[in-house]
Image (cartoon, rainbow, N blue to C red; front, side, top):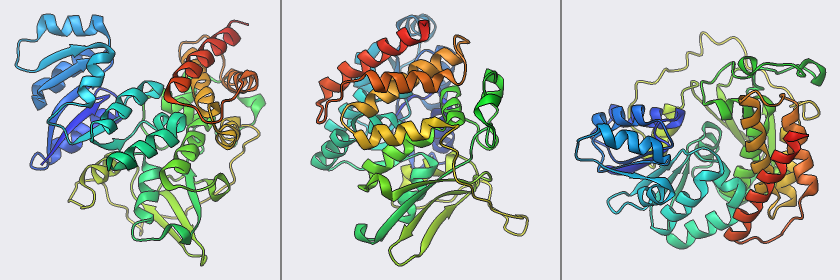
Length: 382
């Protein structure tokens, strides 16, 4: 029985994690639930899973919940409540599925408290990969990737020696605008952007998929998870989204991980590792498959991937700044305050204006995240 703290329980990964937990009540106990502001859904989750602790980051949402809820679960609020959720004494595994930079502090706190991490918050490694991986090593903590691509790489690397790896190959669906050029993207709508061809995800990550920023973040994440150089990480567009990623070895062998497009599968693998357990997830039927296709990503049109490679290669505080600018620009796009292509402009100009610091401490990352958000907001006003 694993005792789990689920940070981001009302989001896409969070709700699917609870579906996995519900399918195996003999394996998982949900000790802690934490969310941002969806008090109604969190209340339903509390009633179903009876955690000892529940947290809402938004104080108004927590106040609403406290006014209705009369059960035994302790209700906390704010950033302090999220940190308490991450370090809760009875928990051994923390699923970090909070969105964006906000996931960094609780992940660090959980690691320092000796909790194993099921990582669905890629921004944690994008922003502070070296710090996070070093702390995990010092604390003897496992970081198990939940992203389908990184879970695939993790499985392909089982039993293999690091020095036999030639290349990591991250697959990408290409998003809803695959094949289009910049002049066709000038006036795309939010609805167009959120119409992902193969995955059902939250709004922010779906926009990131459309810009290929999400794949860029995964490139930086791969560098820290697997200890490889950026020239060993290749992105390949695979529209069918059935090969989730591949590893090429020094003898030329390529090992691929295939599965249906269901996030519950990598979630379950991360939570049950090193074991596999039975599931009801859809199986692939190779008799019905007609073809797998692959393409080179268009990094001139979908500049998010190129900008991420640049940020990662520069290192230091630059990935932090790139991520912060993207979060601000995507939020503006989703609120109808800017256009799709403006996202790239905001990221690029913020990176160009940044004075990079090579070996940042955590405080430097928080400071530069705040600077980048402020700078990006000013760009959006022009």
